[in-house]
Image 1 (cartoon, rainbow, N blue to C red):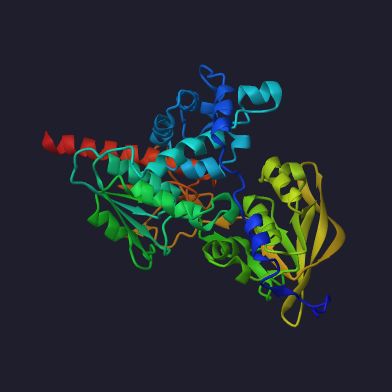
Image 2: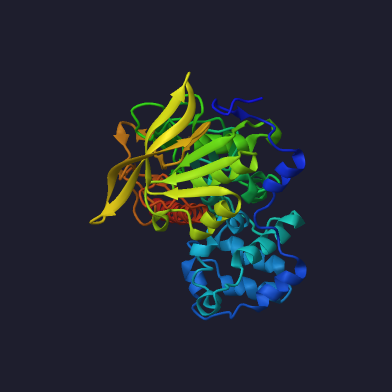
Length: 457
């Protein structure tokens, strides 16, 4: 029998059926009759606020009207022409704070059109056909290097390939997909959807992916600038912020939530993944929610999210907070980590100090709280790692710790563009990264086309 006073981290806490239920699709696809009912609820607004709220500016009224008319394949093409990763975005976008938040139905009735689920219906219908809806333009003879096979890199590569360019994607990990493959909760993208979407995207042709190629280790920016006509950097955020505690972050049972989620996403047997009986997650964003909910789904008895500010300040939306709460996660606020408690090198708890807001600033009160824990996950944000971002002695300019770009996603280095989480204006959302890649691709194409005209004159 396990000593309740000692750390209890083990696998196989739940039977297979319970595990399968806990990791089932968070938003199951609509049934055919539900699709038609939901499409009929759309007012097809002129100058639709939902379209304005979408970072990729999908023509939402048009694609819903196409669904209503029985043309789901046409609806999917409308979606994918603006957002080639529309299938994943339909699953992971915080629609409750984007398109659905401003839906006229939401404003008037408190019940928006389920835009995300309608988008999923259309894109799934197209992917099931096995056909790719777009064709490449005539070959231009131009070659572009894309560093990073995450949403920004994939979006950029697809648009460039569609315009007739040859694209090589260089990815540090073993699989393409970036955040979609490694960084989101397993219950949000089931049945290996991230890889199926990559395979679908590659059907455009003209794109080669080379995995295991890290910038600064296996490839170098100066070489890419020399060997390719343009370079796009979609590097993501490889660094993880530390809690900054004097002691305890290196003890057994103290984990980086991002890495843990990545491991979970890649496991083929959830019953073999160990989890503590008592888990504390530090943070207030989506990573904290994803880690906490999945720890509970693996069988942890007690899971607590501790956030240093109030509920209203959490980056995770109210909907995501509700998902956590309804799945048994306890959310506690105004608690800042002070030290991780350990015995024999193993985490046994965490001491936190209560906070409050004074004159708009967070201050410590001196009152402490201790929560028993076998595992503590830190989910307080990620940072950009600038390794390899120099070209022939010229370092890419940074702003607020990330790559500085202009409106067209051009960096300070000639011939180099960037997008996604690694840029200074990045919002750490898949849909925003997709738009970054699309904007950069169109500007790269314009720059190469202009250069050809100059050379021909």
